[in-house]
Length: 220
Image (cartoon, rainbow, N blue to C red; front, top):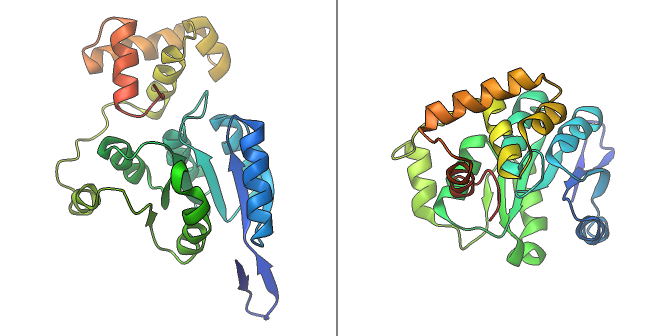
């Protein structure tokens, strides 16, 4: 896809690709560059995608929902604040209403199923660059309607930092490892963990993991 500046100069849509599998990124990059897009940066985890986006300021960030360290939904949520001009498209294998709702709530502009990437991704990029929201065709229109009418969508009880701690714990990290990853003290990380468990009324790690899976924070 190409757009044009006010001086008539041809501009190429600049993309960020974020996926923890290098071969997947390479395949997507080759596919998208054949379509005329420019991949300006790549990331292998959610935190790296935020850093890359702040530096490169891409037009569109294409992020796998199941990213380690910081999942795609939470990365999208933070990108809306740190790189507000960057549109976010999530790639996922999940068409469950819960995942779609979480993504829409986070402010994503596109939600593309991996099984439909070849047919949907180029169209999704074009649509989000026009300011539209793009969803793969099999996504439930009912959940989109509920989101737009703001019905049946409970607020997220956790802060962004608590969600990060929850993801790291659910990925098997110890509190010390989570603290190191987040650049905070062990005491602070433990405080976040205690508070999120109190908020959720969950008191064991196995139940935390199940909650994280149900809410799309980690992938099963």
